[in-house]
Length: 198
Image (cartoon, rainbow, N blue to C red; front, side, top):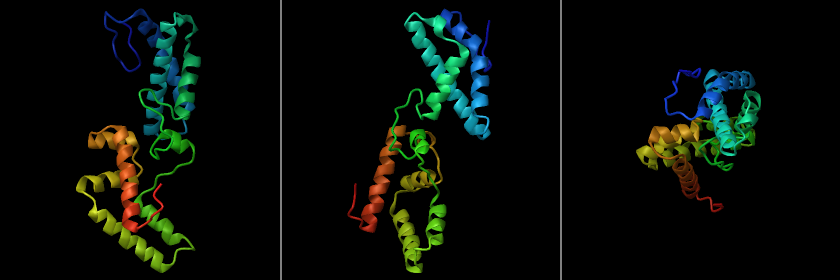
């Protein structure tokens, strides 16, 4: 039986197009690895798997349109790479306002830890010693008022964990993590007395 580079054997009931896609899979993976060679090994593997997912969905669509002959490894891989770089993942919606999303990162959003945030404020030439002290006190007081689960979730998000990773940690959906992030944000605004709640 043919198998992929991931060593998943084909079952006897697999449609014919599965075998054709699996024959292209090594070339698609090579293309994706080259495209993301500058990334860390973890991020590169995540990107390669996202490219494979996009490629198989695109090829399945060609088969459904009765045009499987149009599916070739390089264009499918290129399509997957472009989708990944645009922040479009198979099986997930694109939410550009979610600071943990790939789409937001592509627009320049950066997630940093609370310690790094405090250091950045402390390094600011505009921050007075009173501002720095108030931030440290307020942040600790606000954090201690959160439930244990919310403290853990806020810490995970502040450390830069992606939405999907936090969702797995807390056994909730990525959408729920986005909702909780907004709730934490509004909680902080209420705590600090900021009336400009968007």
